[in-house]
Image (cartoon, rainbow, N blue to C red; front, side, top):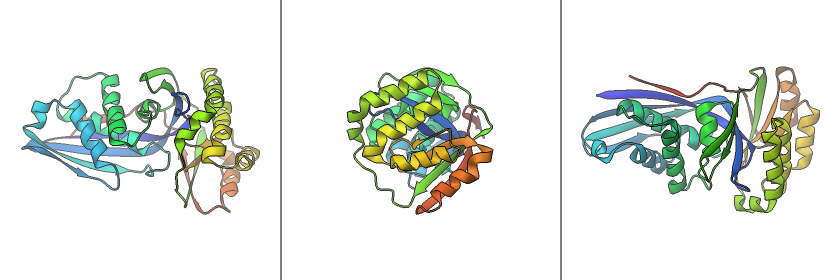
Length: 282
């Protein structure tokens, strides 16, 4: 029996990619681990809590040669701190970790881009992503801030972010998602957010993104204003929601948490992740 363990991390959106195809993400320290083993046989068995088994299986099929799958039974166990279906890149963290584990278990010689595209394609084909979420997989794999073009699967820029900053994430009890395709109506504003990010003005970009998506996905602009007044450097809906993320220094975290306290839901405080994903054989 051969085995491997891969660890990735979640991320938040600074600029939503659906409107323009350009997206910006930043890694968080919420971890995802995938353990994989193979024995002689055939088939894929997946042990997970609510993650898309179809996406995981497609990721494996995308990166592992068919002749290897024909003679090996694959077992996959997923353990993740990243809340599912909240805009915190849980699917990208899992698909990337699955692809990484495959490279160790099957001793595959693939490029980083091939590895990331295996999960990106699986996300599209399984219906968990609209754009393929290349910006998301970059955030989960590389950490730090990543600027990417999703439709072309190109990463334009990477930057490490100060570890003194914290990410305050509010997850509302009501997780109903709205029609994200309407974001294309705000493409001109989202493009302005993208250009701010290209200039290194990440927190301004995050706020402009928050204001752009607010009429379609929420939250109300007044909430973003309250978060800024409480000390946040930037605040926005993350991805397609419903999570709301704010970035601030440690000393402002308590004030920002108080803004969320009257709202039904819960808050997660996490560090920024600048560490690249890693995997090893067991």
